[in-house]
Figure (cartoon, rainbow, N blue to C red):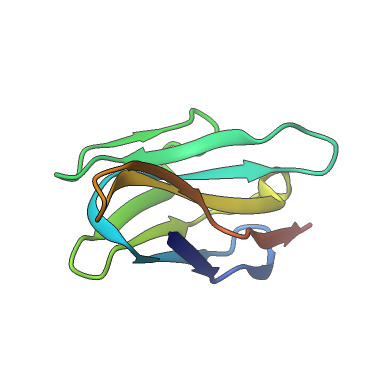
Length: 120
């Protein structure tokens, strides 16, 4: 079993910043990809950003230049620094981590979600 615990969501005004964290624990042998998704009310879950083991990153066009994803492999933790936030960034943010468990099975785990609210 692999568990993800997210933190860092909250309320912020337009133009503000927030930093999300997601720590993985449990029967982890190796973590491969780590990423963030979000789901706004009435919308489907959408991909936001991802980071590979050696640090290469990809971003959705809607957040490019404003959000930065990073990871600390020693802590099995992924971060999302969100700057210049807009009301349309309001959503529940979910982290996603995939890799190999200690029993050498693939795992694909999701966090519980953290709410980010950006007010005008």
